[in-house]
Amino acid sequence: MVQNVIISLGHAVIDFYMNMLPSLMPFIMTKYGLTFTQVGLIIAVRAAAGSFTQPLFGLFVDRKGSGRTLILSLIWTSVIMSLIGVAPGYWWLLVITAFGPLACALYHPLGSALLREGSAPESVGTLTSLYIVAGSVGYALAPIVSVAIVSRLGLPGTLFLCIPGLAVAVVLIAMGVLDARLGRETAIPVEAASEKDGAKSIFDRSQWLASSGQVLMLSTTAILRSWAYVGLVNFLPIYYVSRGYSPEYGSYMLSLFLISGSVGTLLGGRLSDQWGRRPVTAGSLVLALFCLASYLHSSGAAEIILLAATGFTLLSSMSVTTVHAQELMVGHTGMAAGLMMGLVYGLGGIGASFSGRIADVYSLHTALLTLVVVLIPAIITVLVVPDPHLDALKSQEASSGV
Image (cartoon, rainbow, N blue to C red):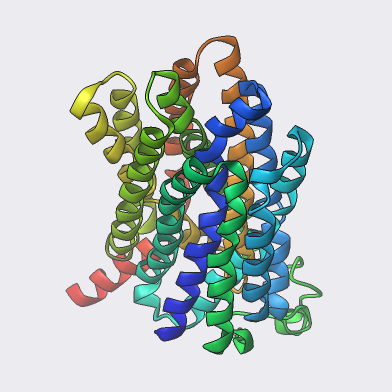
């Protein structure tokens, strides 16, 4: 339990750095005179760098996962991302956003795999949601803390933001996380996989490869949900500034969205343990669609309530789809986590960059409306994905009824 708390703490810190950039974008746009298309490119680069490599790092984690990567991830990210405020130009911003998020590609799959290894099957959804909630809390704090510092010290003040990450890295080392390793049940070396069932490698006759179509459909749902999520996270602060609000107010609204999402993630994981993965994912996305559409056509107190409801419902399935993929990709939990917490997020970021182009051509409000549309196919695709956990629940009910 203590190790799970420490791993989750590290997740909170590393995700704090991942969400510094969107809240600082109004300041950066003013300094560099950026267009929405350029902002969209930064979003895509940032998402891709920290996401597309996660399945590969997940493969590494499944074979040689250890706590050492957790420490390296924190140090790397805290140092690189703190340079955002002193970038000499737009192209340097792209370099920072390309290299800084790479550490998340190491941390996310390993942290999730270590957490799953020490969890009972009936509580995997709940504990995974706690892990993701910790990251969401760090995400939610990033706008408030980073904007407060930059408002007082200017953009160079981001250099001071490396301190929390380095401090937590020291704590993790002191607590012995550096020596944490995955057991054989979770980390399956290629050689072991080759010996089992006569397979030559993890890409031959593996159980999850046989269900690749199912994983693809689930990934499609997660990609489209990430498109909506990444678009909102990156454009909400700018949306409020464009309407005459201060950058601080925009950061507060972003934090409200993310904090509400953290609560939704926690509840969604618990409900998925009781009701199944597919029903919770599909139901939450249906509610998110209506909440987001209503938010974009509201004002005043109703707007605030609906933004919170959008965050709550949209992120309710965040941990659920990760656990769902791990149950489909048996024996490769690290790669599954890298896929669902990494690759799909990067592809969603590319989608959000298209929304940036729409904002330039039409309006930012129109771009946000496209995020409502992408949730429709996300709901459809998850409905055709098998749910092993739901099947197990039904079997237990049938057995108890006999």
